[in-house]
Length: 250
Image 1: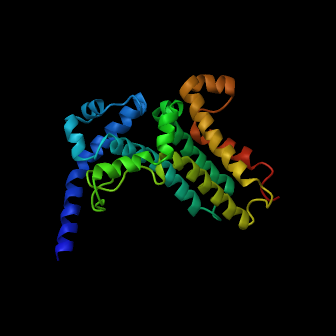
Image 2: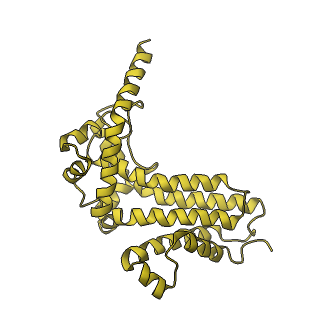
Image 3: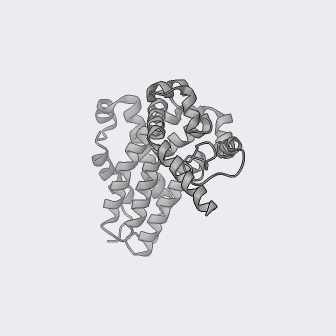
């Protein structure tokens, strides 16, 4: 009875905290997108969310937990797209499935690149991420065993952020795409000799390149000089055709 009561109280606390937590998370995503993750401050996030800076720590154990949860919100888009792709193996067409994935990934990279750009120039921060620093920082702030009934990143709750940590996420996404291509190859919908890791790299790399060029040069310059369509759907269709050229059964 006591265990059930404890679980019920934890669920009640989580439900009560959710609306303000969601507002804070949305503000954090917007501020990090505008400033980059290294320049964003909790003061600006609190102002954007319309709450006091101190109240952030009623919902997140520390700044690391808040930023990890914000990145988790953004990367959830890519995880959902990869999960949908895995479920589409053997259905529709390979080209159509990759087109849908690519359109989603162009939008995802368009959101992610401005958020993490400064991180790529900081070797110490990259080393910390590779060592799963955010998870360790959140666990230290929790001061003991995490309560799974609390929201991720909250005081005493489980760590927040993308599974495997922010440094592992891109590699896991690449591996998931290879897994989908392998399933299609086993089904006879891709040639047996197709270089699947390279196809995955070409597709995801093309999506990053489009997002990068649009962000840096603007859509007009991209259309005129790079001769790429601005619309993610049209670009994704052409990209899927290009990476699959010569690798589909005749």
